[in-house]
Image (cartoon, rainbow, N blue to C red; front, top):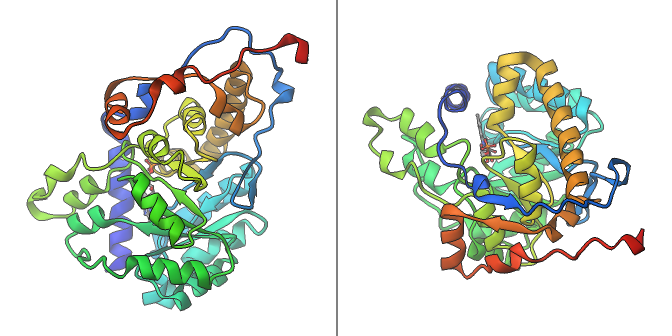
Length: 357
Ligand code: FNR
């Protein structure tokens, strides 16, 4: 049952990536061009730090799969791509392993293929502390993701309707495991209020998992007869909206959901993400072109990101937070209603000072 669901999620996510995904609010963000960048490519360092974690690059392969034979092969290939490019990687939800320990190898393969890489285990918010520890142990994980997915559960034919225990479970897990805990959405976003609550529960990092890329309302509607929850297909907030919304929370933030290219990565970092995560887009490259295509894509993205940072005068990912940004469209409307100062974003840079070089 779970194994079938995992295979169907991959199939439906892939169909989405090959079709038209719809409006993406990263499009609503543009950098103000300043023609004197003032730095060289060799001045750029892509390393990023947040919540005591250090990554060599601000890009990661986000949670997807595991639990069936086919998805075990996908996890193996994703892990090889992560090893070859040095990007951190997350496994998909490990609830299949809790229900059926014989599926362990479909997750463990990630550690076998990528013995020295940064790997994140992934569980849901109903998991016990013991299960959370089992998940971390199985992968010798460097961090633990807990996913929040109320709207996916709502539309999922066999979905959960009990969310009351989630905050206390999250708090117990954050206390009970000895790796950093990252709470993420699966494509509907995390609001400022949610991020603040997560911080109070002892969570170390929030991955906003916003709308605009893989759409689990559409995926689960595709698994329902009559797609009768289709009116939820546009639910939620985009990653840039979430990042701007939670920018003053003090919580370390990761940016994911709808990241399509290196410019989106730069935009995500400029609105406060410590790194940008990609799921559906990388899955498509892997399944269409194999591991070598995914390795080439990730390397190209990292090269382009460094080139964009050079043109923007940003030596480090966090320097991008001092670049001027224009906000337009539906993202601007969101900012207006949520009290986010777009004028400040457009005028926050300091002039390049030749005397300092
Ligand atoms: C996902 N995602 C996901 N997230 C999670 O926390 N646990 C999971 O098991 C899964 N499963 C899963 C399967 C597949 C096939 C895809 C494509 C995605 C959600 C994922 O981590 C991410 O939050 C969203 O896909 C949004 O990012 P993209 O796809 O727009 O880059």
